Length: 90
Image (cartoon, one colour):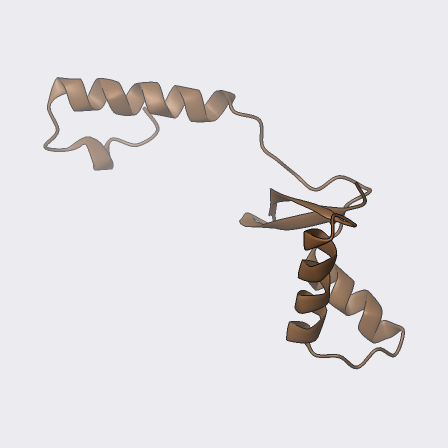
């Protein structure tokens, strides 16, 4: 088990369940961003460098519209330990 602190006061059944969950989580693949994908933060930074002065919200709305029109697809990934959306062409 990863940590004994969280198992204090738990019965053996609960400890076994936590152990099983820990092992399952350890085997799950970590979804990381691929080279052909980008996050909204990367997109906003790139567009601002090009002189586009739209707000973060404006960029976000545009990306959402493109996803709804099936011109972009998105999936959940981990970037720097936090979950966010990664966008790519379909």
